[in-house]
Image (tube, rainbow, N blue to C red):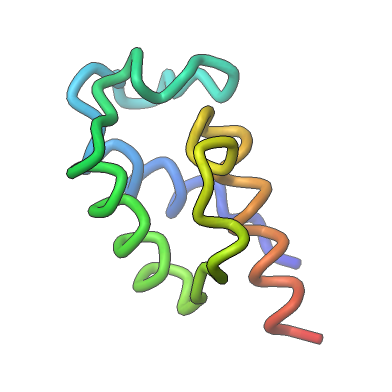
Length: 84
């Protein structure tokens, strides 16, 4: 599977007010970086478009969007499922 880091970070930075380019902290809670309910929806839609995936209902939970690391893992999992 190809590395999605660059595209993932670009998508995140489009929506997180407090994130700094080239310094996305994958362990910090996204709310600390400016994620709110409206930007969470925007991030979700951006990830679906960028990676040509669809988040199933069971992944639309707070834990998926808690940190950039959690979200990146979810995106990678969905890409792997799609490729299989």
